[in-house]
Image 1 (tube, rainbow, N blue to C red):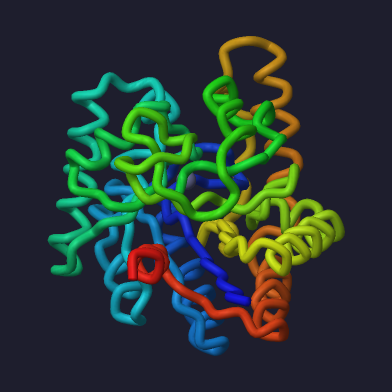
Image 2 (image 1 turned 45 degrees about the vertical axis):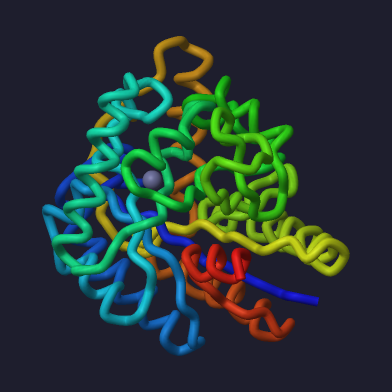
Length: 305
Ligand SMILES: [Zn+2]
């Protein structure tokens, strides 16, 4: 049985503790978050995929170089993480422009083609495969099959499509990223078993995360489904909290309560150095159970062989 694990990292300037985008957070990612994760990956012999926003790549090109030099795959996390510029709300020409620009910024830094993409906040429109193709991407990892907590995040209506998406890596339909097909993009879905298998959940609910991982493992033994874990270097920084109310991003009061206030209160748990042993525990699980770690691009190559 093939036991495969893809560790993926979204690199951006989102300040979790201060609930906003901040260039200062980018500096913490450069000086703390990235070195801490890269060091851990090196100790465990793990190669992963890093998805960078164009914004942080331009601000701190070194953040991209340090991952590339350690042999990790460099992918695009769009141009910006601003909520109003999510891919499921931008018009097609703007989506294309953001994809091309972010790709170019990263390729200029590493001198290597960038083929993998993950949308900020995992928000993609149904007809996304053709835009990705046109921009020169081969792989997407924005779909989170059967993840059920979407009402705590933005773009929840589009994320209802996650309910029916395939669980293993798949070729999408050309006109529907959430469906299996012959002529779309290669999709590497983020693992979920109702609950998502991601760094945030690992930190805020370690016991439930362990249960989720166990259930996913049982599934892998039965179906060969790959593990795709999502984390962020900004979860591993010790950034001070600046006072003031929680910034409002949601439009209606219920979304504000669920998506902004409650979500923020949960998301700050076990941030920074405290997240390191939790992450290490995840890697130890895969080592112990003889998983092979690979990047998104390697996953595609392996599938098309
Ligand atoms: Zn992100």
